Amino acid sequence: MPPAHDRPAPPAPWEPPPDIVHLFPGQGDFAVSPLVTAARAHSVVRVAVREVFARVDEASGEYGIPALGPALLGDTPPSGRKLAAGPVGTPQVALFGASMAIHRALCAIGAAPRRIVAVSFGEIAALTAAGVFDLADGTRIACRLSRCLSRCPGGMTLLAAGAGEAEKLIDASASPRVAVACVNDSDETVLSGPTHELSQVERCAEEHGVAAVRLRLSFTSHHPSLTARAAEFEAAIRTLPARPGHTPVHSAVHGGPYGRDDDVHRGLAACLPCPARLPDVLRQAGAPGPTLLLECGTGHALTHNAQRVLAHRNGVSARSPLTDPDFPWERPHRLGQGPAPAEATAAAPGTAPLREPQGESA
Image (cartoon, rainbow, N blue to C red; front, side, top):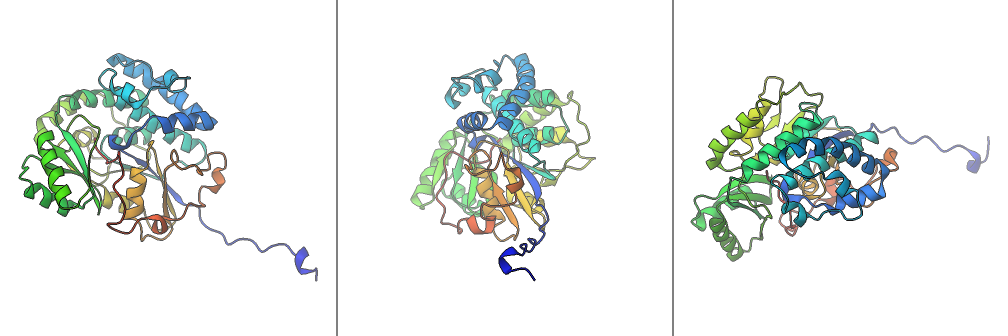
């Protein structure tokens, strides 16, 4: 019998690879610099940005939006402020293209999704990633929605409170035109409504020791007053063909996965008057068994929401590839390893400070 030090190590116990879920966030947590940094550091991201924006820029040019791809990959990429100062739809096209580029880069390293979770504006990229729309039509939908949102004055506020407490603050502040827009998790809710009434809710929240942050969004969405705008938007995108998707898309507004018989044009339009409720669709998508949720955005707010909601689900973890310095772009075989699973990294209820900017909003 050979000495112990010469014996081969016993094989590691086999672990099934995790199911991959891609998370597509809304506009409340979008920044340009993480995408630029990742494209400079990782060739797979750089190639994805170049390829995606080549097609996105062609379609968005129909709406007077200057080409973004060369600028993002150039020596002096635009800031978020510069994008906001551009023609209507520029920030939305940038977010749509960024989400699609991250999705494509993840697929290129073997991390294609089994399921997709979509929040608000992120539904456009999610449905495109699932093959329901092509890149050009996804871009056109983003442009048409941005024009619709430009006619929806108001604002949105993120509260460090659950939906029930948020409703109480709305009542206590006498702000009847403010509505719960997005329920992100048990300790985070987004409100939507006129800016002066949002200010009243924010003051009331401060008096009750609840953190509140006004999102840098110059419109209202997920508000019951927008039914007419939703009808206009639905009519504006109805001519763009929808195909059967190849990957299930779980919509926080729809309340679950779209089925073959569901009207996705109407579903996209429903994001204007209807609230987004994230916890239930995260629980559906984070199915039993090893699951890795990857955020296809430039921030990490949706990742944190997933960590909170799925904190007690064994074998489930969530990562934000563009904000995680240890994300293994060049070592995809390590995707199933670290960081700590969601149950180990999630903050205890009520202890996490409110992050800024964030919130999942159309």
